[in-house]
Image 1 (cartoon, rainbow, N blue to C red):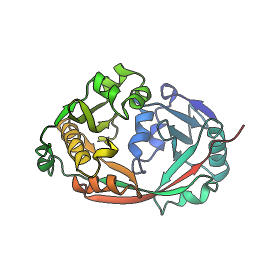
Image 2 (image 1 turned 180 degrees about the vertical axis):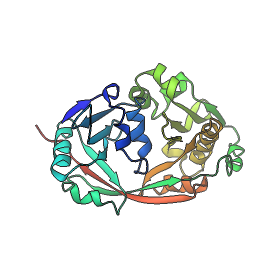
Image 3 (image 1 turned 90 degrees about the vertical axis):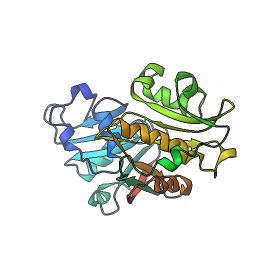
Image 4 (image 1 turned 90 degrees about the horizontal axis):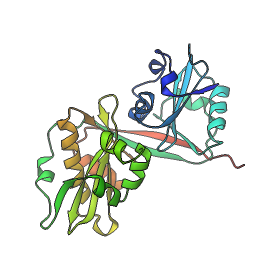
Length: 259
């Protein structure tokens, strides 16, 4: 088993991975070198299998032909440095190859196929009196709730500005809600939204996300939405914004090994 970086990948390596996995976009942003992650394989030159771990939620993706002992070995290797997660559709036979989870088995929802350029006008025009929606610059992103973490994950403010963007809802220079997006892959981008607790339940998250999605679609990309099944508020935003396909998958996890 070898750990490699994207520059060491054989031309055939990316083809080992499926584009129909849950959160497949995250897998391919790592394979394309636009977001951090870890890549393991049996042979960098002529691989028969690969495992990719994205760096945000530590989810792994399985590519090629792997057996149960190999998968267990990879998971144990990665657990030396942190938690490990995997998301698979409920009928995926690879569940039978996984070691028993030690953390949890959440259900997660994924939403796809939002009609491009449709269904946003009511939210684009629905900015509350006394508020404004602004595209976030480097000052605003660092003042936002998730911004400092997003900037660090991107590799610094210049890298964030080059590959990411976001919008926020402001009142008197205070950020009430924010929606951001990172690099895309497979023609897809994944919006994320956060509303300050005192302002939840007012539709602010939907408004600011509608502005973000409008900007993404203007660039020619599509979006998808991802949230845990328990996150009723996030799922409600996805449904209001018109995603037509809703699918559930299972997320398993393994805790970091104690040293």
